Length: 178
Image 1: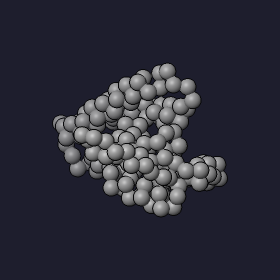
Image 2: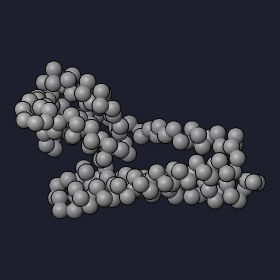
Image 3: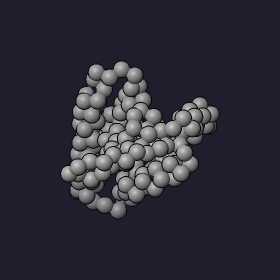
Image 4: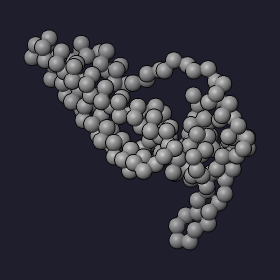
């Protein structure tokens, strides 16, 4: 998947500023995609040149002006073609902590348990944040099946990650000497 399709998908829901898109990545797409400000704005500029999106300057008094992006018919057509026709590739996991876990044999029991506890803490924060996001954005919303599907994946992923960490902790406690 490319950033272009993620942006088209977001803009197909409603027009947004670059900042709003970036914020959505941080809140809603955290489990399956990430991007920086510069990557988003670079791609938005390319997409606008390719006429997949268009923008409108919103002039404001007292605050900086903003640029509102919206998807064009050509952009919608490309997004639908990608949704329907693009082959589904196997999911790839790219998790830095799993690289660390593969080298746990170099660490002490205490160091491993400390790392696992920090990941559990991180995932509990993500889980709480996603549950709150779901409640705020989806409780009275009909037709946002994509938002439900992706946030539900995030909830299940965070729960699985916590469960995995707890299982590894049990193994470390049982198998390793102090």
